[in-house]
Amino acid sequence: MMYMNKTIEELHELLKKGQVTPKELVDESLKLSKEVQEKCNAFVTIIDKPKIMPANENMLSGIPFGIKDNYSTEGILSTGSSNTLKDYVPFYTATAVKNLEKCGAIAINKTALDEFGMGGTGTTCHTGTVRNPWNLKRMCAGSSSGSAAAVASGVYPFALGSDTGDSIRKPAAYCGIVGYKPTYGMISRYGLFPFASSLDHCGCLTRSVKDAAIVVDAMKGIDKNDQTSWDSSNIHLYESIDGKVKGKKLFYIKNVVDLEYYQNPTEEFVSHINNFHKTLEILEKCGVTVEGIEIDRNLLNAIPSVYVCLSCAEATSNMSNLTGIIFGPRGNGKNINEMMKDHRTKGFSPLIKRRFVIGSYILQKENQEKYFVNAQRVRRLIVDKMKELFKTYDGLIMPVGTGIAPLLDNPKDSVSNDDVSVLEEHLQIGNFGGFPSITIPDGFIDDMPVGINITGNCYDDINVLNIAYALEREMPYKNQIAKEGMK
Ligand code: GLN
Image (cartoon, rainbow, N blue to C red; front, side):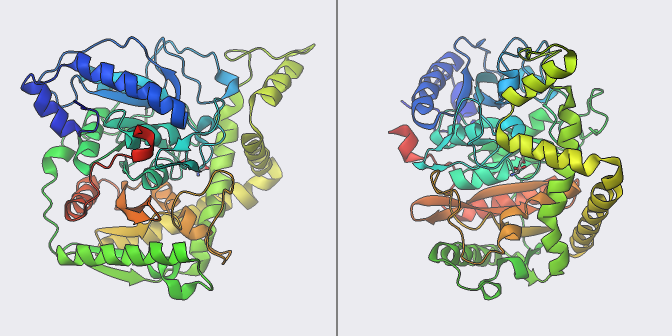
């Protein structure tokens, strides 16, 4: 009997009735971890002897899960998928992980990511490239690549991710699963390796909307160790999902999505957009109104640049503690500066070195006003525009990316028009505003999954989850398992 292809809701029922034990679930999940590691290279560490927790009334008790390797875990290697921390074993556990452990969930492995979360391909992990379980020649996207590959392969029903630009929501789309980041600060970031603190969110990857609600209910809560966390004890996500969406209103950004705005789109791109529109019809049948609206192209075009400025600047500052002096392998040199230089030169991949160069440039005294402060101003304009729209609409609905997961040896197969960066990067809006945002599966193109995303106003998580749930119910893509990874 296979159990790990079931949802948390289903597993909880089986555990409660005594039809399976936590130990059996753990054994199966460990076995699958090893198989999926061979195919997808999804893990930094497999926790061979996890502490078995008993099943009780808590929906997560006895349930195996994965942890992205940028969450600190006491006594367990936590590398951020970087050579600079390849031997780092923390002495404390991130709050989000602790909260799950308090529920009795059982960590099975630590999943690979783009180095420190910086990247969207799953190709910059110090343990090598993560492959997509639907087709091993394709990428998972990133940075929560290993978590997405594992959940999509049916290693367990959920894994933790983090999301600074789209790192939960894009891999979810490319792997045919659900990725949810709640409102900023709903989950404490204490113990999550910081990338860009004003944009960083904790969240999860699952195979159903209700499972995502169960996991975030457990992870969330105010925490004295994270000053941006807030009290959400009156919010019960799972219990509040009822699928009643009649009368809800959504918008999509017409001048980013609709084909009439693109010259010579590829077949894949056309299928992706047509598929999106078909899904909107399903929502309309559920009683949801969906309107396409235009937003000033100048404002939209600024999204990727604002993201680059702010994320690189914050990352450069946050990661200045990675010197090889306090943790990480010591560099060689005659003095402390030479030692730090050697450690950083050898430790970081070219991609993040490039980002540190951009960040350092932006943070130079003479450039701060021109780049950093201006990027913050434009971020504010984008967020204000969204907040204005959220007065009329319950949320923004958009296709994720421009199609299916690109091939690993040909990283960009996209439309012939150059100007697709807004469609590739629009999920960053959710990070600029700290908005709750969820991706769910939206069918297939050429046997590869694609996703659709719903983003709502801050603190409106229940509304966002409810619309996603109503849509999931009408489509046949709930709890999908990738065949390739399981073969
Ligand atoms: N693709 C984004 C980047 O490369 C996403 C990162 C993230 O969300 N952690 O920065």
